[in-house]
Image (cartoon, rainbow, N blue to C red; front, side, top):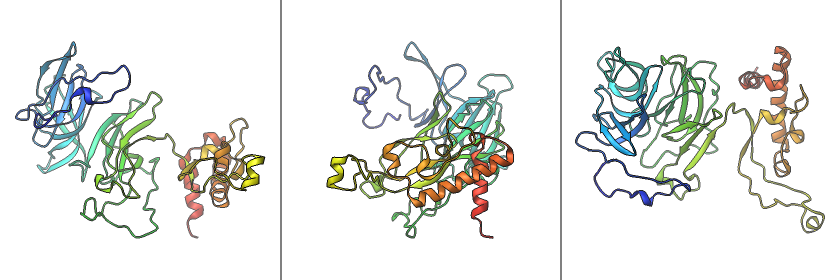
Length: 369
């Protein structure tokens, strides 16, 4: 953090019980710049990335105190994300490409001597729109230890070399009224998918889109089950408007196989015999927001080969008072039929059928003849 201005005191930060926040170091703006990213190296040091034309600073912590502060000599700056993996330091940052052009990209830094003397810095892929606050951010090691995951903000262009095997392929505007761009021009012209996460091999190739729809998430992390979580926020200028969503933690569900988005309210016809005398309708105090029904809810848990739709799917009492309406049942029946087709063709059980193959059948059926 920069030393200018008032510094937030550690005791002013809210923490979970048993945790304590301590201020270890303020950046020296003249030599270290303004820190914007953090990572850990194999030596246990913290690497602090800084803004344009500012260095990467390794910090050694010993016994809870700063023992040593250094600087890496790399031709990269505006470092938005770093990761040590596959005997390399991966950096999302600004530098010069092989043709001398300045650009923002994913770089791999390696040392022939095995130390901090990174004598080889190679560009793996460029991120058009990747610089600035809404650019390419976190780099994560995939749970399989074989791939990289890169988080990009909503100003970054989706890679043009995405593999057709990408788990996430279908995204578009879902607008009832024509798009109204920001009055100040911020983000104007940027279309879906918004912020996104891509997965690739250690050489930056074989890129797959695995998630999208975020605004400008800066950091994501995998939990112990290999599921992805992030933290996002809407434009501050929109605070107080009907479409503004508060800051939020979100869960990128593994195999997000949603077959329909349900929007119907909770409609319980008989909450109790006494209550039903007063009104034939009750919502049990639940105000339903739009929610997605996954393919998994259509597959029987205890009976192999059984698919269900409509009123028969897996759901609790309150949910069942919302989803079994005709529009939802049509989409569920279509998805169950597509899953049955794939299962029959591949001689597999429905719970073993990849969602991507079910999705392909649905797309084919919906395509005009």
